Image 1 (cartoon, rainbow, N blue to C red):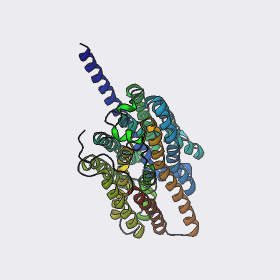
Image 2 (cartoon, rainbow, N blue to C red):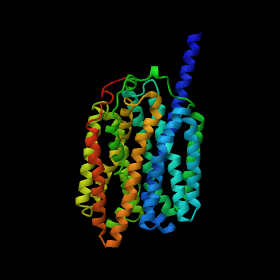
Image 3 (tube, rainbow, N blue to C red):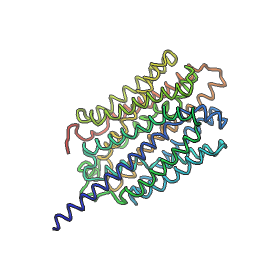
Length: 414
């Protein structure tokens, strides 16, 4: 009878864990939407709030700057309280911020609201990582596949922020569309509050063997930090600067930009769904290095011929965006480096660098654009400079990552 009760309790626990994972995955879909929507409705936002290039840089970077700053405190909260409550509280702040953005007409308030949205999305992917990697299979090839699959599903949010958002904006305006997204954010917040376990971590003696090695002094964080800073810099052209680039250089209107961003989102989703398949056949480290090399190639192509062909440019932006698909691979690899008791803090540090890279890139791009505007530089030359700047951190990140410790075995079936 005791065995039956234990089996029943284990089954119920697994079901709750699955519901929690689905709640976090749905929240991640929304997080990807909020990372991406600015690129599609950028001209409407600039027009409504009368943003200068520098203010637009602040606005588009505010999400990622606050997102990045919040990662370490959020990780510490996860170590102390688990995933459930910190995530739900911060997502509630994000819900209010989305609603505020949809109603305000003040540019300063819009920037504050954008920062609030970043705070609301800050714990989502981190929560998903902690939810999976603190489990018995944390750090194994099985957990890598679970994380990469959830990450791939989350990329659908970027797709929603492309053609559906551009269509809704052209018919109803961007404000009602953002109001609807606030309602979905509220639903996601309630899902996390009800279905994510309060304490989903495990005792260190049950941790994955790779994690236990950390307690004996294993350290390779420095090899992961530069690649975390660089991996999503190219995605800035999907989240904010891709829209202005296609409008300024090729004359794309809001529908054309929405179509282009739809293509990039589909490419990003396809890349993310390829990761769980490829990781069965390739070592995660080799896969990550190959993807970084592809991103460097795309940035250099765009830097050398920024106005040659819209098709080539969109394809290269797709390749740059897809570099972000290695994010869950690098985070899972960190599981074998970070001590179990400090997993939230360690993942928070690495994740903060990912979004700090996006925030810094967007702000730096705004400064470059402002100077170029005053100097009379052509649009093509301006974006050539931005793409060249994008290649630099990718090169540095790839060199440092070359020395990183290997992750889970490619064919491991645990």
